Length: 266
Picture 1 (cartoon, rainbow, N blue to C red):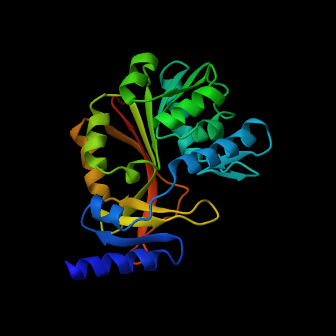
Picture 2 (cartoon, rainbow, N blue to C red):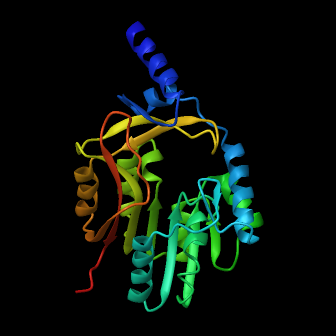
Picture 3 (cartoon, rainbow, N blue to C red):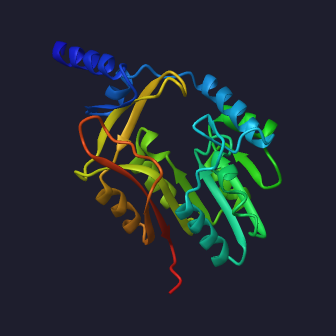
């Protein structure tokens, strides 16, 4: 017990030295205990201010509460979304799980302008939803508190999971729950994997220029994630390199995306 306590103290204080991903924890609870945590409302406020600049035309793009002068497009993501819209006769209804205040929507909206029937629904925590409804909701961009509520109102034909699965306490079981909804298309983007093809729980230390904090983060075995889609009878249409380059401090990893569909057009 003393050894484990000292080890966690060492991992926490070592990781505090610089941003990155540290440790190899036996479970989510151990990684949480080794994390400093973060102020959710503070991050929400930073995101609100950053996205407000985008809406007002003062910045081109926001990601992780940071603004940019130009949009860093993910063209594979855009291609996946356009394919879904074309496949459905010009109707694209996105369920963006963990989509903050609509960051991906504002990143993609100009390219998606030709889609004649576009709906973008963000499923988020209650505080984000309240803020989104008050300040950013439009006829196209909507906010919901649960996947079930969103499906009931919007009937989405594509589920977007962008840099979110690795921050859930039980990602494998949660992904199974999402797959059970049988949404026709699923885009898994900006997801982290180990070259060793195994699961690993780390603690991520956030760059202080973004905000101060650290919290648990998964790196996955790609085979296991692919297996969940196969079990639910989803077909792989496309796999692509993601924009991120995250990896633990001591092990090679990569970040990629996938497009899966329930029914494939030959």
